[in-house]
Image 1: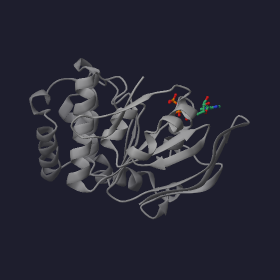
Image 2: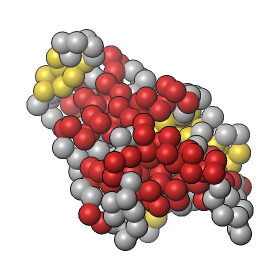
Image 3: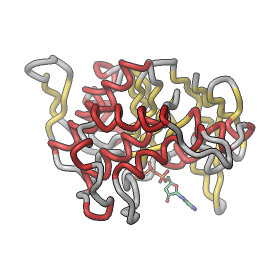
Image 4: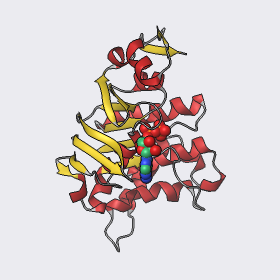
Amino acid sequence: MLSVDKVRKEKDFKLLLKDVTFQVDEGSCVGLIGPNGAGKSTLMKMISGLEHPTSGTINVLGQEVGKWSVKKLAQKVSVLTQDGLSPYPMTVYEAVLMGRYPHLSFFQREGLEDYRKVEHVLNITGLMSMRHQMLDTLSGGERQRVAIAKAMVQEPEVLLLDEPTSYLDIGYKVNVLNLVKDWQQREQLTILMVLHDLNLAAQYCDQMILMNNGEIVKRGNSEEIMDVDTLETVYKAKPEIIRHPKSNIPQILL
Ligand SMILES: Nc1ncnc2c1ncn2[C@@H]1O[C@H](COP(=O)(O)OP(=O)(O)OP(=O)(O)O)[C@@H](O)[C@H]1O
């Protein structure tokens, strides 16, 4: 579904990624974690086709990323960043409708089926009552929800998220991640998500990939990654590991 094979990236005589290799299976949610400067965003930019590896290959849905046309890639892969949507002077409805554009031909206008999809998504994301509100009047958390709605109507097979919750309060963090998780389960979506918050990554991701200094240090589930020695080596801080009282998933305390 998504495979990264021996990817290396050099920039300005600096080695940013060293032989990074991993796969994300169809329908699974993998969290990319690691300290500041580990190379997570650099890797995400290459997977989304914004930058090219110095060597190695990245395949999405069986084809090398660089070989997809921009339009085809936009139909298959949706990218969400921490900034969400820019506060352009357009309504929530118009912004979400833009998610249909990769599916329309150059002169084609959106049709009834596109409007129906937008309305369905506005309902499931709880944005229906805000559909006439201008994007530049929304809070950061609301705008991030609109970004998710726009990505949903795009109907991608792969979703790439780079720190989608970093500027959000705890209520919105959970809200945004629940929307994404429900979507994954409903549509068998394949997700690769950069998260700084290890507790959220452990709760929401099926697997985690821990990066440091441009390399993968460890891949595993929350039991394997939330290990004091592993985290101390990488983050240079010694966390306490406790268990979530409801889910029993390991969580850290600093
Ligand atoms: N254009 C560039 N030229 C030189 N170095 C760069 C460039 N872009 C990124 N880097 C370096 O690459 C390294 C990895 O950066 P990257 O943004 O991928 O890390 P990250 O894991 O996403 O970090 P953070 O969690 O802080 O966002 C950093 O040391 C950064 O300084």
